[in-house]
Image 1 (tube, rainbow, N blue to C red):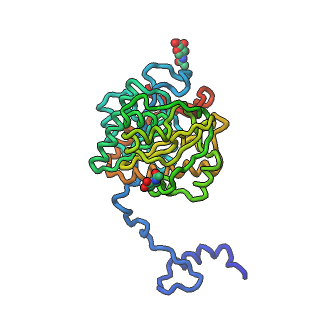
Image 2: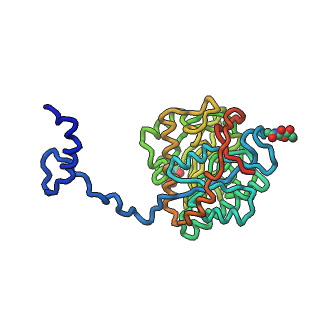
Image 3: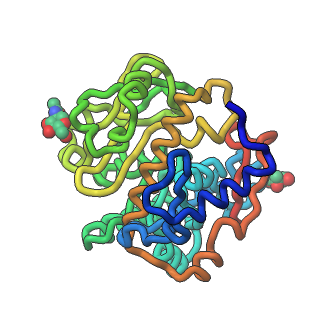
Length: 336
Ligand SMILES: *[C@@H]1O[C@H](CO)[C@@H](O)[C@H](O)[C@H]1NC(C)=O
Ligand SMILES: *[C@@H]1O[C@H](CO)[C@@H](O)[C@H](O)[C@H]1NC(C)=O
């Protein structure tokens, strides 16, 4: 069959759009009327969420970019991870005065604790304050999610157990690993609830996630600690280089808090280490985690003033290319 001449196509489309008879002629494309997309979405869902990320002491490059004692940084991959889920970031600079921290917390819809190494001093104190803020908000019936990765998970375990020696040593530096699921029924409603069953299976057989840690907690120690076992539900476990098993993903039983010992942000945004998985499956794991976290933040009822948000967004800072100096990060945001 011959197609209509090319120059007639816009006219035909216009005629189709103008057609008003309710019984559309066969072959006529009916488009929704103008304005049909403007219907308000669920007002309880906030589509402009902002996430606070706590900065970590140092420059992310062992002092080779900036070795000032008050310098702190955020690997840009954490920022991009949040952006990938549809949110923006406000940096919570760990050594700023408490009033500033509280002011910024009033502007966000959830928080993220990054990886790193520091487990004491002012940084740990700030993490404790922010963690308490997360609990208080949720206890007051105000949804406010936390996503804590690697060091973040370790610090949360120390805080919840009230035991700074709760962690155990593991050999999982620069290692891609599997995720094993000890209890499939615990996955329902968790971040893994949005995974295709095939991807769950692949996670348990292929090394799709990046680990980089010397500490962790074994399932046995977590289960035997009353505070931890009543707070957390174990979603996944992973073996280290020696086959020693540690908890790799948990979710709080009663709070929108998810913690990973592994690094979801790296599969898409970090390239310094050759063992970081970058396959389509690995990327999808990361995207699922970002989407899940930000879906929790959309439930936050906080609607901060747009100008205050703009004044504090991470876009007020220019990231530094660190791919030639840092062992871990392509790009870092520095604060001093
Ligand atoms: C770090 O500090 C030393 C002095 O202790 C200085 O010589 C060096 O230039 C500093 N490095 C950077 C990147 O600022
Ligand atoms: C598995 O998870 C379900 C749902 O969270 C829970 O009710 C059940 O007790 C768990 N089973 C074991 C053996 O931990």
